[in-house]
Length: 461
Ligand SMILES: Nc1ncnc2c1ncn2[C@@H]1O[C@H](COP(=O)(O)OP(=O)(O)OP(=O)(O)O)[C@@H](O)[C@H]1O
Ligand SMILES: [Mg+2]
Image 1 (cartoon, rainbow, N blue to C red):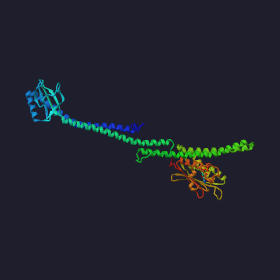
Image 2 (image 1 turned 180 degrees about the vertical axis):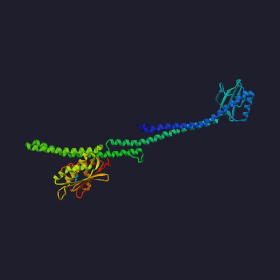
Image 3 (image 1 turned 135 degrees about the vertical axis):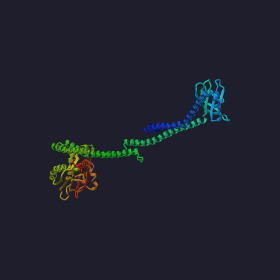
Image 4 (image 1 turned 90 degrees about the horizontal axis):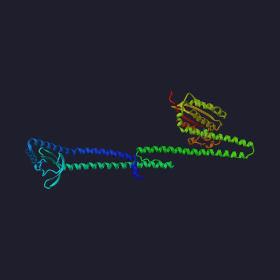
């Protein structure tokens, strides 16, 4: 498609064309009105005067007779008012008037005619316009005017009108072409950019002219959308490579173990290998379940699935469940939960998030001095929010690592000796985002304090 044919097919141009037609029609109407009120008016007035004079002379013919009318005509000619008169007998002889002869086309029924006249000493040819009537007795009466100037005036106006119309159409057309070309160029920019993006270059952005108009707003929104997509894609890429990496090692290990068990003859050894394999598969399943839970929480549209619930109740339940486990591990768990905390929540996901925090506190929260984990779980209302915190007495997480540990599969070096996938805090983070709340990791001095804040439901709901 050539650039020009594209312009003609653009919707802007079509819009401009429609406007142009309306514009031309209205300009035409205005000019026609002007014409009708200037040149047309003068002509109509002249015609009226002529007709009135023909009527008057015919009346006088009836009253005064032929001689009387001839007298009147001769007098008027002498007065020199610029009117053309001619009265001829049925035989064609001139009876009165200031024309040399009756125009050749003044024949038959009364009518308007145009005819050439010769004026002045230079014998210039002018156009005359006259009305003629046949009187009783076969006489013909003709009254007319020299309309040369009128005709010139009319021609001038007519030309002006046509030129104005032509100019309006040309200007409108050119303007439309210019506007749509400009518009098209920007649309082409956006189309080009989106093609490059579709071909895989997600770093590309839509051009923004800086004028702040509709196209700019569109481009800006598209760019924001692209940034969001780019972020999500980068996240996906990272997750899938992490998943691949994290599952590859245990799977390779499992394969090697099964292989060597197959080669071994000792049934005891084979049994031990099978048991270890089951254990490791369970671990893999756990990883998958954690990933699925995160994906489910991150899908976000389950927000409609949130139900009014009492966060204090959930905290109490989880704390109660963990108390014996913590004590068995040689630690202590103290719960400080009072009253009710009405929130909108997915009970199961919120309980899972809390469990993950307590699990971490238990795993990493032993005090260096006593080797015991002292866990404190608190829940209270503060400024329209339910604030839930889990703190321990361990080494904590350095401030510069606190956002990193929320990412999937991230584990700090000092934790490698403990079991885990590095998915626990990712799930907490996704669950809290789903609930419209926040997760902050802080210093419990010593130890880590993880704080969840959820919006409280208004009273009475
Ligand atoms: N209470 C804590 N004290 C000190 N370090 C912690 C604490 N909680 C988490 N961390 C650090 O953050 C890392 C990420 O925690 P996360 O819960 O996401 O994974 P994980 O506990 O290693 O494994 P998973 O929870 O999947 O079993 C941990 O490996 C640990 O290094
Ligand atoms: Mg954990």
